[in-house]
Length: 242
Length: 242
Image 1 (cartoon, rainbow over the protein chains, first blue to last red):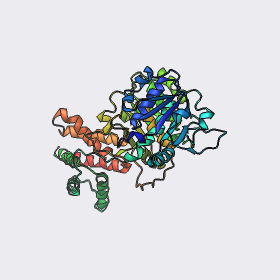
Image 2 (tube, each protein chain N blue to C red):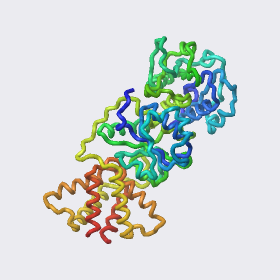
Image 3 (spheres, one colour):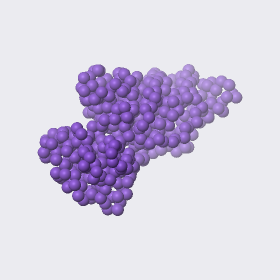
Image 4 (tube, chains in turn purple, blue):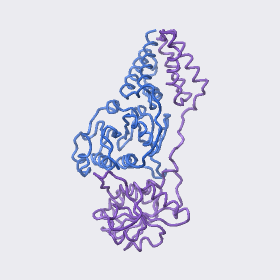
């Protein structure tokens, strides 16, 4: 992951958070995915909070200084787009997006130099309607309707983890030793066939071609490394010498 | 989200978990996304664990009874595909997938009626290399390299949350014969190890663990069929009888 410039980090806004532990876990989740801008609205236990520090496992060093505000209007003053992470409101008409779709939309805003904020309500009562009314869209995590309650920091994690994902969806895989050439692999397969012939493995001559193909299918499917083909050769030597 | 039938739930396997709280938070994350099959390998504080219960906020009622095993070989016996959730190993060649891609692949397996397992190491040291060698692929959460450490339950959450998300179409792979269970594969690997021991393959005793892991890595890449494991057994019989 390339760390994004901090002006492009969406801000995470916790509205009236109660437990310092959840603020710390929020900071940890943000740092895990390269977000740097954490804002608090009227945290119950004030700020700074030693319990947040303890739970953060050092994450605050990777964030910009935390900013504390009295209201969402203050906290979101420089945002261009504001998402409320909450259950679907019954009495307001707003777009509802899953975290991935919301982050895609947020990226489009950020790509134009805009500031995006994600707002999370407090542990007990979630976001109040006044704050919700200030947000342009709802982010809703698609949880099991029979067991839907997420902890605050878990909800944050599921949103911020979308920030890094696509860039690294398929990392190249490391190789200790270079991949085997087909020549090396086929040499092993030829030798295996000879040894099996000698061991009377192919009892019915008519079935031999199919059996050989089946064996080749086992070993040709995955890209074996040079070292692995050498290991297979060694196994064959050991078993036939015994 | 429609709750999936429990036989299609991937299983979550915690290898040597230490804190009951993390087991409880794992159960909560699973229930949030409709997974039901939790297995523990040698939990430090035994099982059941009141701290797990407390942290679960009632999630265990939404899960099948938790199963406890001594080893990964036992815990994964009925799985057809096994994913290790860990940092990228330096000395093993395995596919590395982000959680979303891994869950897409897992869905393709499950769509064919196969059982999929996701393995998570303990809090202190993660997965050990012996267990890692038994898994076909690595799931790696694409975290910020400068602050990459995830709590165990957070890692579980980021994997299981992929289970509910998008409907994914993955073309089923044609199969001549049903996929092997890990139990069938491990039986072959155990026998291969014994035969190699008898053939004096592991000359330097100190190197044996590494050599065994290297061999397991060749064969544990996912997707051997029952027929292919039988073929490997037959090859071994033929070579050792000769």
